[in-house]
Length: 562
Image 1: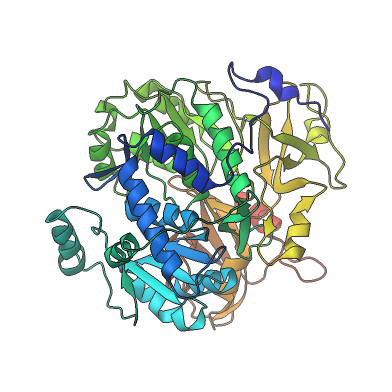
Image 2 (image 1 turned 90 degrees about the vertical axis):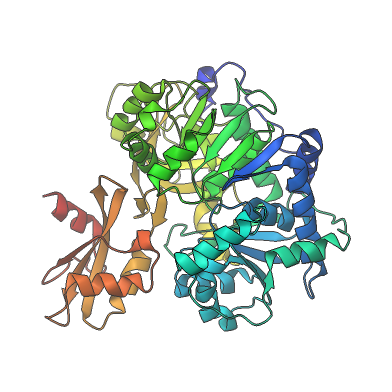
């Protein structure tokens, strides 16, 4: 393996190794934070701030409630289906402190997507925001879920604001479709029950599964990456060590506009909390004027986002007038940060965006550029305790590119080894074997390493499409489109999009000559989350195929470039 050539490029103060075993579990880490920063503000949302002591108490109560539910025990899976609200960290930390496993669920899932994830994970309980309870109601009877905890947006806000927010959302804005789930327990009732009972200590090990974090893996079939307590804690330490050179304990304010159900936000939030930071949770980052108004309230020192959000903020009136004097860290992940966006961000804020790279299977962080370095088109250097190797199709290691010769001879699959790499895919040994080889995680991404240890991502071996940082897999979209009776066959590719980086395009051979693009899109909207719905529909007489009849997506891509 390449001798860790990247270490010579490390920023001052970043060690070659981190201690991945300093905590026995995430609950162990949390206990320390709750005690050390008890009187400091921990999380803020919709006008209310919880201190670390309050977060400890509420998550303890929720943990005790879960333990008291019939049939619930160590390792049982609990799904959380909610946007960023105060309830999210309370439920999240409560599940982990109860010795159970978190299954993060995108609240925008369609019934089909939700059913698959709940059945596959074997989730016994779910916390769901009322706005999406009607979706859960449609599939609940087909899943193993035994306990449903529902919450309303304002449930952890003080009275009378709680009453007002919940009334407006349900009665005025009519954002809560009618639902009925017999036996469902309200979140506030769950906390009250938990407060009246004791929290039993649970013996956990670093190898216990903390998260089943769902991803498409290499095939597009949604699978749960088994992230152990050690995996997650290691990546929190790696990330925290990398970004925190100028941090002061208990003094930083971090804006979290990305959803906590996304692994990037989840890990970075804990990394910032290690410093006793205040995390400002943004419920609806798509409301850019609202986000700018929230940013105006804070002298924030950190922020995580994807390229499209950085770009959106830069184009929102009022953003360039904010106070950026405290800003230390802006981390871009999920998708490539565009040079034009990075340079404009620097002009407006006075700070650089630090581009990082990762994937769900690595908890997710693999590498990042040094803090406060200009955009360079690379995904940076491997984190502490992380090895990255570029491999050819035969799994042979390729040498670093020194700047001379054919760069293609140095380009191959990016493979990763480190304490943050997942245990495997849940209940999928075959799929696990495809991506884990001799201790290495085969990322499916293609690139090369230069002589300084910087890695450049050139392509994706997986035919994945990145829409605003979210993975979309052609197989899934093709399967849904093919369900339409007017479709004979189809192929899906990603196309460049100014707003989302990429958008989904479907190329269709019609069975029904009257089939329209509008009909295809409406069909997809009933079965797919919004970002997966094709933005572009093209009709053709035939599709390019291999000798065995497989649609050649690369030729579909080549055709659209012509």
